[in-house]
Length: 105
Image (cartoon, rainbow, N blue to C red):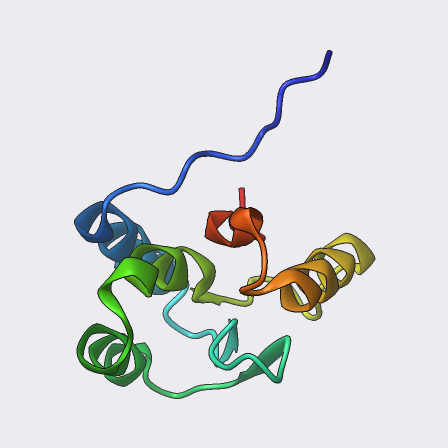
């Protein structure tokens, strides 16, 4: 049986640190994943503002997964696999027990 390659969601602090590190690694990226539920990716000029909003306005039990999913778009456009993963994620959110998984590995 094949093991899942997805890492379990970490603590809020760990996921926030990883999120910030991803944006620092790709500082010129202007498109982000999972900023809002309606769009796969969108233009965003300031990740810090979105992180502050998540911290102050979202339920505490959702913070780690939101930090895990909010990332800069690294390529020119998302792959077909990433599109399918997001479509599945959006279809299932928040009505099942898998919603604490990430579309990112």
